[in-house]
Length: 472
Ligand code: ADP
Ligand code: GLC
Image 1 (spheres, rainbow, N blue to C red):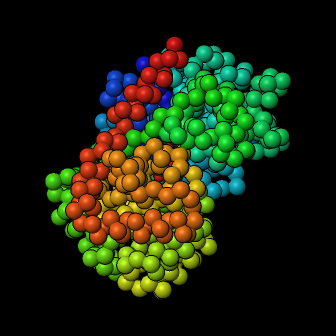
Image 2: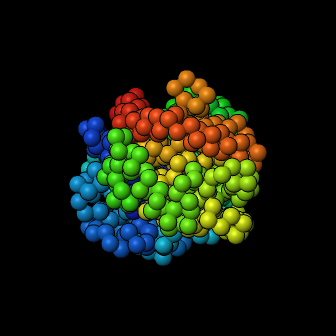
C-alpha cells in the first residue's frame, strides 16, 4: 500500500503551524504500521532547504495561462532513514521557491501550479499510489483535477482523502483565473464553485472520496461553525470522519528533548520542571517562585489574540502569577502585548516572533498554558503541554474539548472555560492559581498528565482503516 500526502507544510522542512507537525509525523507512524508513506510539498527557499541534500526525481515545466515555469521534483536524500517517510519537494522557479510559505499576492497561482506539478509528476509513475491524501485548501483542487481534468484521466480511479485542518481558510479565487486549471468539461464547474467564486476547500469536499477533520468534535461543529460552508458540511457529512491528531512522541519528549535546559520524565518531573522554569524565568526576567502562565501561538483572532493583552492584564492584576507570550501575527495585538511589559516589569514578558526552540523551553518551564481559542480544529499545543507536565487552560471548543477534561470532572486534569472573554479566561487563570497553591494536588496532576498517551499510534491506524475502506 502506498499513500502520498500532499501539503504546503511539513516539519522540519517548513512550518507555520500545526499542519506542519501533523504532516511531519503521521507518515512516520504509517510507515511503522507497514504502509509506504511519502510526502510531497513545495520547495521553499528557506534555511532548512539550503542545508538539505536532494536528488532530482522529475524535471518538466508548468504553465499558468501563457506563462511557463521550469519545474523540478526533488527527493530528499535518505529521508526514509532520517524522517521515517519519503519526502519530495516541488521546485518552481520564480513562483514557489520563496522564503515564506504563504503571504504573497500570487499565492493562488503558486499553489495551483504546485498541485498541477504534483499530478504531472505522478502521471509518470510506473504504478499509481493507492491513496492520495491532501491537506487543507492549498491541495484542495487535486481531488477535482483527478476526477475531472482530461490530462489526468488515467489516474481517475485513485481514491483521495482530504483532511481539513482549518475550515476558516478556503483559498477562494475569482473565476477569472479559471484558465490556470487544466482542461475539463466546463459543465462540471459547479464542483469548483461556492458563492460565485472558485473555492478549493469546497471543491475538495465535493470531489474527494472521504474527508476528515482533525478532531471528532470539530466535525460536529462544522455544520454550524459559520465558515460559509455550513450547508456543504451538513450535506456531505456521510463521507466524513473525525480523527484526532496525535503528537510525534520522539520530537516532543521531555526526557530526550535537546531544546530544553534539563531533561526529565514522570519520576523526575519536579526537579526537571524547576530547572527549566529557572532557565526560562532568567531569560525573561520573571520570578521562578510564582506560577507561570504562558501562551504560544499565532496571534490571530482564532487564538483570541485580540484580547490576549487584556487577559494577562486582568489575570495579573487579580492574581499573584507571572505571564509570558510567544507569538506573532496581528500588529495591534503585538503592540499591546509589548506595552504590557512596561506595566508589569518582572512579572510579564512578550517574545514576538517564531522560535521553535523557545517554544520547547516554554512547554517545559511553564506551569500553565492558556488557549483561549474562538475555534480550534484540534490544537497541538495542549497535547505538547500535557506531555511536558504543563497544565492546559483551554476554551471548551473543537479538539480542545476532546482532549482536555476539567479538574471539576472525575479524572479531570485541566481547566476549561466556556467563553472567549477577558473575564472568563482571567477567571480560569484564577482557578489555575488556586490549583497551584494546592501543592499536593498540583503535583499529582502534573505527573498524571505526563502519562497520557496522545502519540500518533492510535490515530495513525484510524487513517489506515479509512484508506482500507476505499483503496483499490
Ligand atoms: P495552529 O496550527 O492553528 O497554529 P496548533 O496548536 O495545531 O495551532 O499548532 C501550533 C504549532 O505551532 C505548535 O507546534 C506550536 O508550538 C507552534 N507555534 C505557534 N506559534 C509559535 C511561535 N511563535 N514560535 C514557535 N512555535 C510556535
Ligand atoms: C490547524 C488548526 C489546529 C490544528 C492544526 C493541525 O492549523 O488551527 O487546531 O491542530 O491545524 O491539524
